[in-house]
Length: 297
Image (cartoon, rainbow, N blue to C red):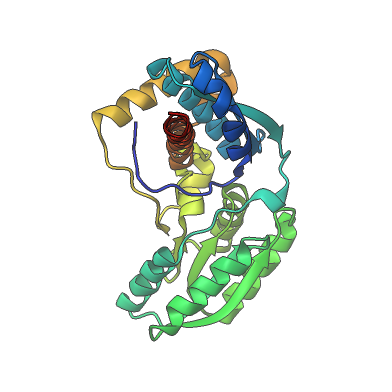
């Protein structure tokens, strides 16, 4: 199944090969003698199982493995996952919006005639990239980045309110927000009582936030009424609907904690990524085996 051809690093997920070419090449000679032996391709998986993204990604990867080998029972290779829980390690939050999305934001801001913008972002390893993308995109328009405000995921409500009041005093009404859904929820819950989610203010959120709107609590969604958000679009299809139904049925039976969660784009990307990896491993094995057979004739 290929919901999208775009494979990305996903929030809370780092997936990498522990060993691929070595075990494959080492096993080619034995395969030439017996094609019934299954070759294990070891893959390291690091995912934050305590986060919304991690739970969905983990479940989609499990389904991807199961679905792929149910359809390809005679493969020579099989992915063997080595799982590790990152336990919320911020160094693993590698996802950021790509430059094309910051260009869209800059274009929207310019179209409305806004001339100055403030960027509010979560201070982590991905912040440097999004800040660079925003600055570059705005430089290509007549929009000026007046200031950028960094918040920590551990920031208290008092600290968030202090930053919001400073923002209010700047009299710059347009803000672009790029941060984790949890921190964004607290930002908007504190901004609404200050009268900052109202006429005269414009808020724009990146996909890191908007992709998880379905998983946010009703008070958070209420506090974000009027906020403009950008998210990745998944074209509707019968295949996608069937997968979403299967995912919900399977995972609600296994983990009641997933009851409040919705399948998201990161889970779908993870599913496609694992399927692509399993396909690549099999193709590499097939090519190496064919090469050995030709050389031994």
